[in-house]
Length: 191
Image 1 (cartoon, one colour):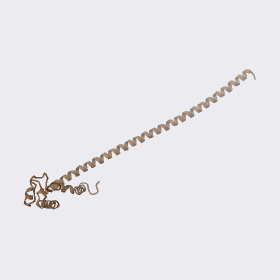
Image 2 (tube, helix red, strand yellow):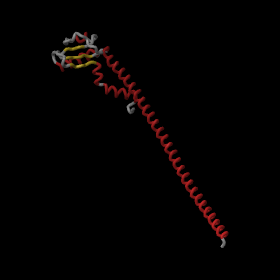
Image 3 (cartoon, helix red, strand yellow):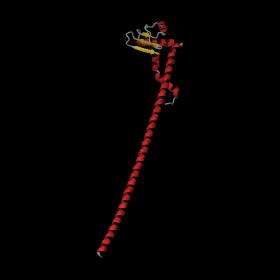
Image 4 (tube, rainbow, N blue to C red):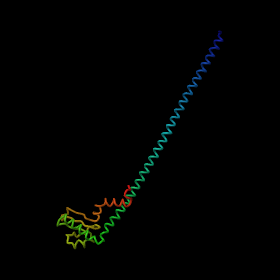
C-alpha cells in the first residue's frame, strides 16, 4: 500500500468516523431536544393546572365570601324586623295603661313591692298614675317617675329599689317575647 492509498484510507476512515460522530451527535441533540421539549410541556401543563386551581380557589373564596355576606345581610334584616316587632309589642304592652284592668295591675305591683320592702316603702309612679296610687293610701314620692307605667318602690333610705315598671316587666319576658315574635315572623323552624 502506497502513501497515497494510506492517505485515502485514513481520509475515508476519518470521514466515516466524522459521519458516525455527527450521526451520534445528531441523535444526542434530538434526544436532548426531545427531553427538553417534554420537560417544557410538563412545566407548561403544571403551570396551567396551577393556574386553573388558583382560579378555582379564587372563585370558591369569592363564592364563600358572597354567601357569608348574604347570610349576614339576611341575619341583620331578620334582627331588624325582630327588633321592630319587639318595639311594637312593647308599645302594645305599655298601652295596657288605657285599659280597665290597668289600675288593678298597678295596685298589685305596688302591693307586691311594698310587701318586699316593708312598711316604710316609698312609691313613685308617673304623673298620670298618681291619682290611682294616692287613693290606695301608699306613702308616695311627690316627684313623678319618668316611666310609661307601673311603679318604682324604694326603701325610705333609698338603698333598696324595686322597679315594677311596665318596661321592666316587658324586659323580664323579652326572651320569651323574642322567641314568639321570631316564630310568628319567620316560622317555627326558621333559622
